[in-house]
Length: 167
Length: 424
Image 1 (cartoon, rainbow over the protein chains, first blue to last red):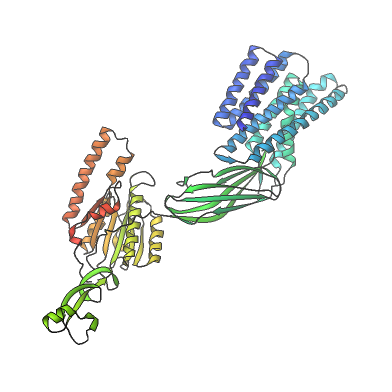
Image 2: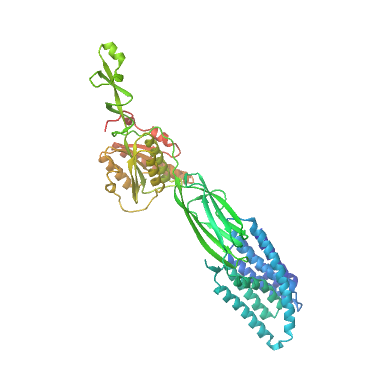
């Protein structure tokens, strides 16, 4: 069951860029991602899963860059959720190897993913609505700098918060 | 209990950082949205810092079993706060055979919920420490983990399997206590011996009426005394061949345990010397408690490699009483054990050597090619010559082929031991 979730997530991550921009380069990158994901599922090593996720993100970025200016928030949020499901299910498959898995594990996982997906969609819509409002206030020339600073700030804040938090 | 970020957390952070970097470089907001679930998960993990509250109870179905029997281990977890995901791993001794079930479990618990899992372990000889459970509780997204080692130490003793024996090597000398051996000396007993004329002090019940009536005067029947013997089992732990659980040492331990049980049933006093890298000994004594002592020593018997020649002079004299029957159980692979056995025979001990054939044990693990078979046959010939050398020293040598029963090997002992033994 856990590996089925990983396979489904990998397929979503492969298919979404192909729909956005069906060109050979995107297809090739997607296949590399699939191979890495399959390696991760077969061997239960961590690095192929992480590498596959990065390749899929690159593939999606390439597809968006080639594809045009239209913005699909739902697809993007779905892509992000698929990334989360892929990495989490690979880690769970690793934990479940040679183990007795309680039925409650899969049940709580499905419930958790469903609730989180709904919450993520709502938050994504809210953020996009807020972003459209704020975009008018930020000068065009400063927008890339603001975006880069925000991105760096979020990643650094998360890294610091995770590394310093102790129970 | 300290929480730490799991490798999954690092993976999520890496992918999120890569996605937002690409979003900035490509100026596409979709990539920010794609990174959003990962960022939210990491953010929630960074905010929630309380460790889950739970308790683990570890139970073992039996503390003492015989080789090959099963022990059921039950692990029960009770959560006082919700535990979204918990990994439990029981640290098992390396050589333990896992039967049905698994020693690892993955559970999810609500607050107040209790769950348990059980698995079967087929014991191999030895005293095994069980009860160490490593518990790794994770948060809902698996980003943060709290690890704890629950030690509820329990010792499971797996005793060697014993086979019933009837044809035991008879001792040449007996001791003074009552036992099952008919002594040549006359006295109290039930085995009729000589008939002599009645003398003052003889009991009326000793009168042999048939002889008395025929000869016209009173005659009494004398009886042979029934005595016990001191038996010292000497187990070779210098070296072994064969696969685990069926090595020459494992077979030797089973043989020694079977001999100990059989001699103790005959009211003999039985002692033990494990002769190897370390010398362990048990003083001869009789009774069921003595079997427990011997079995406890036998279940610990293992090969401890050493270049040092062990001397039996280190063995206390109380462990090797004079006139004791020494039964050496060995594959006869190490010359140091051969020397020790010959030394005992030279010191006047009554020595019987039971040789666990290493050729058969080795043959059973080989592929059975022509070259293997030839090598085994040559080895068997060489060993036969070595055993004959023992016999020339007057030592009784019994070769045990593990495919056959030990009883069969003991039944082949020389007639020298069939006559009644001399009084000690």
